[in-house]
Amino acid sequence: MDAAELVAGVAAGDRRALARAITHVEADSPAGRAVLAGLYPRTGGAHTIGVTGSAGVGKSTLVGALAREERRRGRTVGIVAVDPSSPFSHGAILGDRIRMQDLTADAGVFMRSMASRGNLGGLAEAASGVVDVLDAAGYDIVIVETVGAGQDEVEVATAAESTVLVSTPAGGDDVQSMKAGLMEIAQIMVVNKADLAGVETTVMQLRGLLAIAPPRGWTPPIVKTVARTNDGIAELVDALDAHRAYLRGSAHAAAERRELARAQIVALARAALYRQALATAAHEGVLATLVEEVATRRRDPRDAAQTLLAAVWRHGQDTHEA
Amino acid sequence: MTTEQRTIRVLIAKPGLDGHDRGAKVVARALRDAGMEVIYTGIRQTPEMIAEAALQEDVDVVGLSILSGAHLELFPRVVAELKQRGVDDVLLFCGGIIPEADVPAVQAMGFTGVFGPGTDTTQIIEFVREHAKERA
Ligand code: B12
Ligand SMILES: Nc1nc2c(ncn2[C@@H]2O[C@H](COP(=O)(O)OP(=O)(O)OP(=O)(O)O)[C@@H](O)[C@H]2O)c(=O)[nH]1
Ligand SMILES: [Mg+2]
Image (cartoon, each protein chain N blue to C red):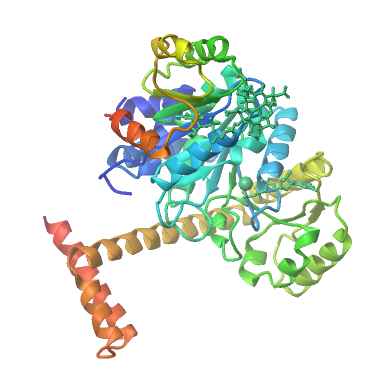
């Protein structure tokens, strides 16, 4: 199937074409770029939701529960779940399906696992593209689960309209040390594992953090959930619906869309630049030379970084002329 | 990733009510350490769930792990569900407790590689590298 056939297949609801289209987009191949260009005008219908939070807080369980509740409300659901790639082998074990097994047999759900493939920031570089493909395929809700690794995963905000930040009572210290950036991108705070002791403490800590955050048009609600038993999941979907209504209905809608577009463009350009810098550094042996000079203190690291950038810039121009 | 080599994606699944999951996990880890992306679905998968996961994940390889003795019953159903979904270009292989006498039948179903207890995982890695189909 070539790009045009894939675009037509995705538009016609062909699941195999959809799966193959995602593979091309993930590979960022010429076919993948053509597929995205063809599908992008069809996007915008889905409510895109990002779910982030530290490892093991229950993101996958929550996404499964969320998807089931959305299905109960008659909506179709696309899911993208990102797990880390091994920095050593570049391989990955993608295990998020384990928590969503029952959804596999539901024709109204399409779930795709992705490896982060070396991208920092909690997502795979192509994740927002895969969200776009599922949006274009007509899923009403598209949920993306980030890698549960750390506190700096603000990138999810570039892939989804509504970001859900998940914490747990057990992670009380986590909440206190939560980076401002992560708090600021979240539109809904979930305290999952509300069956464990210490929920109210965590809720109070979150409230305290929200109180000192700069005021926004939207005040993030705090929702307590037990993802394993579906407690609080209907409330979470209500909160998501309210945020969607806020986004789509209000005067902010256009501004929010522009903000999301801006963040996406910058994030993609940054990732592409980073990749190009590494390729140039490896290709011309520039980096090895600079490393040697800095390590022996003949050149300072900032000057070396500038020199590397200059080489990337030259290389970029060469390839454009070629 | 650029245009060089595509990362091989593998689905490792356990069909039926078989709870022996050590072998599946050992194989999944070995393939990850060999640079592949492995989707592990967990135990108690129906043939339909396995085929649907293979379709959605667009994997190159589907590996079934079974120690319950139900392979002759379950494997053909997985193959049929895959075929019904048009997933016809994946490499199939399997492992677990599959008696010598059943191996020809399992191979005839399309499972090119059959690996029993004690198999060195480097052998499994080599098999995948060698047989995973090139795609257009
Ligand atoms: C450990 C074990 C258990 C553990 C399982 C723990 C777990 N979470 O996995 C426990 C104690 C729970 C257990 C329970 C039972 N067990 Co048990 N168990 C075993 C035992 C001793 C070892 C299995 C094992 O883990 N091996 C280590 C792993 C690494 O090896 P492996 O799975 O063979 O995997 C290797 C290869 O086969 C291959 N491979 C495996 N999968 C795949 C997949 C792919 C794609 C590829 C390429 C390769 C591959 O590569 C791996 C690496 O070399 C075997 C006997 C044996 N020697 O195999 C019996 C055995 C499998 N069990 C058996 C039985 C009967 C049971 C029970 C029904 C017993 C009972 N009556 O309660 C229950 C059923 C449990 C259930 N829900 O299914 C029988 C099965 C008989 C049959 N098939 O005809 C066996 C063969 C023992 C026997 N000789 O009777 N068991
Ligand atoms: N007590 C309790 N346990 C839960 C709840 N939700 C999830 N869990 C358990 O928490 C563990 C981790 O759940 P996952 O859903 O895999 O968490 P995750 O955040 O997706 O994990 P990673 O993807 O590895 O970062 C599992 O053992 C779940 O069963 C809950 O509400 N209460
Ligand atoms: Mg998870």
